Image (tube, rainbow, N blue to C red):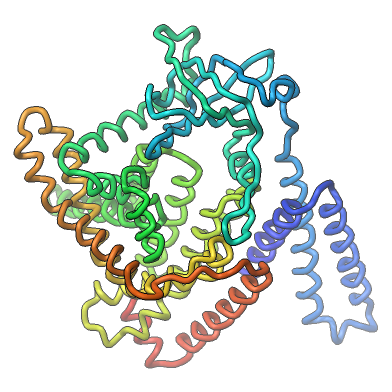
Length: 526
């Protein structure tokens, strides 16, 4: 485990340093540092130093591993950069028109839609983000003519002085240009076949919109938007006031595709397959491996994530949720921790921009780590709570909130003083809200045209659950001093906060493993 931490930590550190600097100096520096530690390693191996070399050998070995991994991370980050196509640079600031393919499900806002398109023109191919009115609507896989003012995305500062690298945020998805004041015209007869991956995305997008249309048929706004957001993510339709209430109360994560929501879906899928296989064993007297239910549950989760958008955010949430679910189901935090580190490494190798320029990536990592290592500790503190459900839900909500707090404050500055109690209460409602939203969505898909009254009836439970969440968000946000905006502070404070949290978690984990009463409590909690 220590070696894996050194490799992943070093690689992430190299990516981090290279993301904030230019050129190849970072990779060279880390190679030189590895050489220095290597020289000390071989010098200390001299016979006259052998007696005192035991602990030093481990230190120098790990230091070499960290530095070499950091050099590889910095190199991978440098290789991920590519120059902007000269053909499109020459047209910056001009009103242009291109033939394009819609490559992702549009992000529909209150008055606009943001659409990723892939443009091939003049022998060059690139991706652009077109900001256009909501009508005419387009879908993933459409071949379109798009016109707009070509520009480059730029970083911007929020009201509190925090800089958001919007250009890098878009680049992580391959988007290099913006089309402002855009307008679409869909081709009636596509001139060329759509690539297979776009056709897959189109199928998933159609399934997603069929479901959201079903929810819309069963529920009025904003309850339908909240129901869809809880299940597959999205805040459009909530309105600015309600979105602000969810943000101030610390509950905004329940209306995006978070790892917690995905974990609930994974839990349901695995539980369904376990029950199905138990029935098969009783009926046909044939034993089915428990890993089959986990595998099929994971497959169902992949299909769910595909319908939700198959974006990097959704995939990341699914991977993190599966790891956290594995840890909670088996109590094997050690194995789940290694899996988390491997996923982090693979995702950074795939796209180094995730680390610094994707806010959701860091929040997913620390939230999952909190569920793996911190939740069992908190659950032992709550052992007096007799209800296993309430104890587990409370520990999970507390662990996730504590784990994300330092990074969330650094990114947004929004300190919600009601977030912990609001999230504990919401965690008791969200699973039911998701289940009822599924019922409303599928009911709307099946019966909206043939039995409208039945559709509305099936939507009543989802309406009540959504009403409870809206009331919780608005009531929490309305409390005096419900949230405070902190000024920007250096990232070093985030590092110190997580160092203290890691030290605390390690100390308590050691205490749990050595104290019989606490060890029993931990076993009972898992």
